[in-house]
Length: 180
Image 1 (spheres, one colour):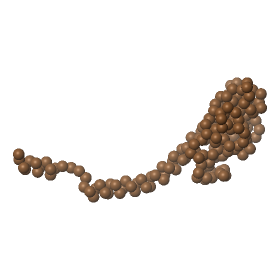
Image 2: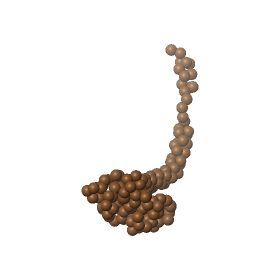
Image 3: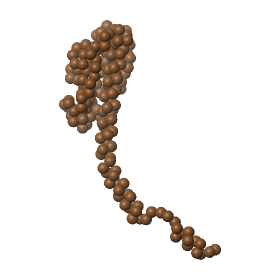
Image 4: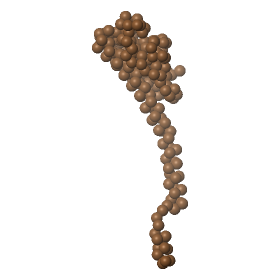
């Protein structure tokens, strides 16, 4: 066996030195330290947007079903998915149903059109005085304008106010409500 040949192979092997490895790991740890808090905020912001869009799509469904069916359709808070629970807390879930007699209660002749489960992640959705939203056959919501406040653990600065007008249009404002 030729000893010079073995030495030549060993001499040309490539790899990282210990100093290069330590520098790389140090840079990676610094970048992660900076990036992780920003990523958490990004995730929380996206969760609020997704939950806001979820509620807005239920409002749009209730309005379109009222027009399509030419009868009242109601959206109300519900924890069990079969009846309205009343109150102004919407983050525990809600349902959309055709309200044939217009009383705002799920009766035997009413059809449940959509059920939404409770929010996750500690997010709350509350309304001022609205315990339900009812759309007439023309697509207008009865009663008065309503504001629904979507909050997470970060408080008022990141809150989203979902404002529903009597024509059934919803607009979103950020940081305008007061979270409890």
